[in-house]
Image (tube, rainbow, N blue to C red; front, side):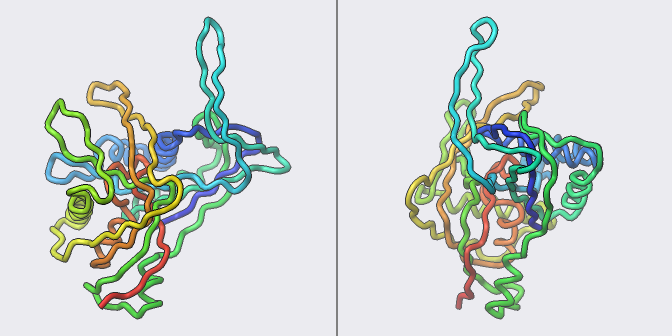
Length: 295
């Protein structure tokens, strides 16, 4: 299932450029309101694939702003020469004229969606994104792209192939090549050797973990399209390590739209779990542009 969450602010403020880890914290906060044990289990363990890989089975998009914003890059000194950086997206708001923005989230796990929504609508709990206080404006379910395409093109076959054009929604596709310990990470992009193979491998591992059986269909075929302007998105997220300390993770991935062709079941994994790696950190959320049947 895919939903859109619209939030509102009644005071002017700034949304940080690197807001992805703040949205992730907000999501876990919603889950914790509804069921603390579930939130803790998902955050610390999640769904395990063959003992050495874990999936959270949710993915979220970047933010879509509903009103005008300004890019702010400010450095200021406070106290004993302490440098404070307030960089981000600035907006104006008041109680009479609130500012709204939204992000989308998807998951194939009904329990996750149910507890997320329950947490969103619990009364008496403040919503915070970074340092910005917010309130819930609207929550809505989004159409199922594959069901819509099936009705439009007459696809009813269980293993029918479809071709779907998708675009990342400010949520880059992130693929990192496995490297031996001590060696620097290698980020892969469309056209690099092994890129599509790792995309498919990741989707098949998710399928195996979700359904408890290997995927036996054909792998997906990807055709990435060139775009004008920015095609690469970079940001930093923070993750708690095994020692309890926080470590930063640099994310770098493509924002190129792409056409994917293959079995409906594997495309659905990408739509609801995310394409590529680090989905629960805000990577790999895509929306459909169009769908056609293939021979």
